[in-house]
Length: 241
Image 1 (cartoon, one colour):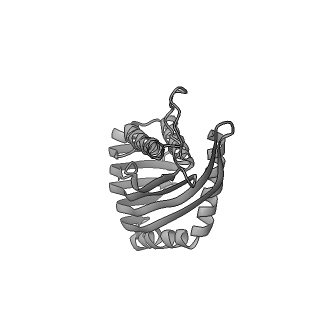
Image 2 (cartoon, one colour; image 1 turned 180 degrees about the horizontal axis):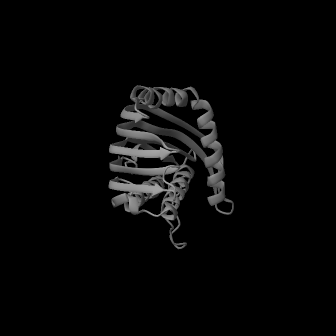
Image 3 (spheres, one colour; image 1 turned 60 degrees about the horizontal axis):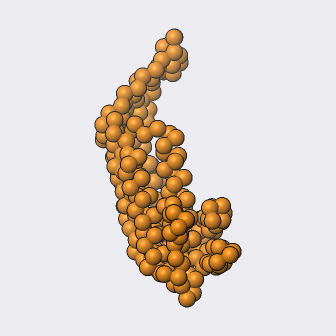
């Protein structure tokens, strides 16, 4: 079943590795364990940025290895009924479920300054694509028929993280964070889906919500989202330093 075989525990590990690696990225250190005999030299800018680039590549490869990019389900069928089917009976299928782009982490800019003890970064997910070839369900609930059908695609365009972190690096004290700023932006979400529920076409409502309400709401709350990201990532960084 392609990516559908990935166990929930494996997906959780991948998600945790992504967040930890991203936090480590912001802190200016690598998520990849290095032998104690070969610590990262924070007086060498190229070694620091190289270690960060390696961490990003590892996260990207881990996403691929887990079957999350591409994630593909050719077809899945599902059926269930109670011992008395007129109370509840369901038959459903989905086919050609596809998701791509989660591992395509583009580095627009990555710079570590020893003089300023400052890391600047600009990371981007250019395009995350979701598509559904076909889906249909027929249900009976208390002798009443209910149906659903859907297909189409959703594209999330240019998820971008631009930020700066200032660090203190001491021989005895180690690494500590002086300040952290993040600017998350989303270019757009485009939805082209067909949704039929109980015999009524809700395609326009769905597309307007996903492609209009969702991105507009996100953009209207950039300040709050960035504030939350800074708090969460700073806590995560401090836990892993």
